Length: 80
Image 1 (tube, rainbow, N blue to C red):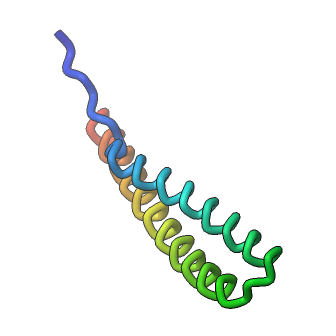
Image 2 (cartoon, rainbow, N blue to C red):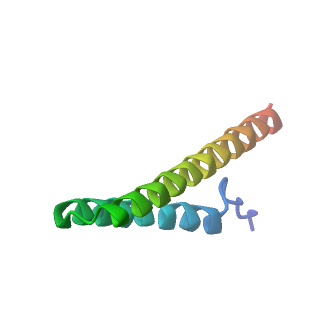
């Protein structure tokens, strides 16, 4: 029986990344809602939180992308 190939990216990390993308969307919607309501304190707090959340999402994305490229290079080296 052939050995089952391991996934290139950990599924838990992918779910974490998708969760962060969803939270970014929710945060952006809340910022827009606060702007419409003219609640400037909420806008400031939510915008700061949104910036932090976006930054952490981008960092995770880059980390997972680098890990994926490394694993693909290792697989290619093993084939040769």
